[in-house]
Image 1 (cartoon, helix red, strand yellow):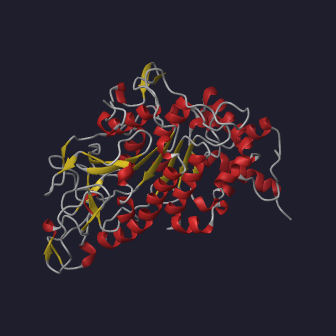
Image 2 (spheres, one colour):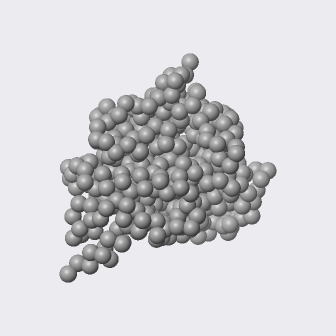
Image 3 (cartoon, helix red, strand yellow):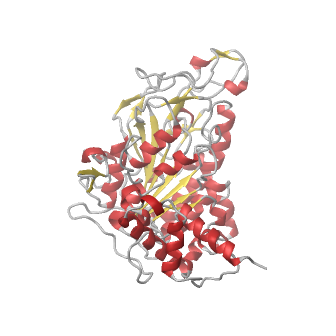
Length: 478
């Protein structure tokens, strides 16, 4: 016999803790709305997909290769700049590192920025830099800043009244620095209704929007009773403002609309033909790209797909850097390229801005950046006798790559440059995080002065409202 009361409570907890809600304020209908552009800034994109390389992706090992130094016992660490040979892309004079051939074949549809510089936050901590990247604000803050996806959800509203505007795929919150990760997966002061709909495992995406087995899709109790129980079992009980409580209530209401809607099928990867599924299926990240494609085509505003940050796994290469990157490239190369191709062929790429980025890069020798070196977190010998030391194991913040496609971005462009010799720092057209954010907002038609008054002061999308877009990468720039 099914314990429906226990399942009901678990379902409530799941929705509250994981943000199971579509975050719009309107409850009527499921039709698509027109893009909500701000006067004077014509939008070139309606949807954003962020492909998040969590853990620190080494630029010299991926999209900005330098001199290839093969492994041999006794090789000096200072000689090692790239552990992979270069391979051509379909853009003249643009090379990636071996293992990224598929992404290289879609670069005629996008731009690579090779001069991103991460924030100087002192001691390297992944979640601090990820917080900075996703919110544009350095932690800690007296006011919780919204995630970039929450700003977009708030300012533009839903494209589809049923599909959540802001969806985050692939990151679990039961591993590693869980609380630190939760800190920036938030709408902050904007309210719960604009926060992320969290799907840790894309292969169970449809299950994320269903109540527990045995309840069916009908509301199992009145809206107010559900809301009151959720509030009683949440942190809002003691310190939630009326605004936040009302925002949470609207989240719950939208959750039920989604539960009862045919649009829930957008989360079901079994709807895809097997041959398509197999192309994307390199693991959770690859299937996340497939789910992102389906959600973008069905009206999500902002979708993040993460390779997932777990300390010392994935891109967080503290050792065995070369071997680990062979595997990480296998995880991302095919599905990222296929996502670009599928959206292009379906006609969605023109209005979908896709970004591939990481919190910072890596180096074999330097920890931090020149002139702001921080304490070494990884032991690296002067001479490499064991292959586990062959690779980029230290955290490097002075140069990194960001890739962009669609949504008004120039095609076949290379912007910025890093030095060819160590330190492989940004040396031309350096880009910082507020420029990335304002480029996204500009493409969506959100003006740079957007702000709300919080605790008696204006709080902008980027600090002090001074961020400017990288106009040179925008196709509409003259």
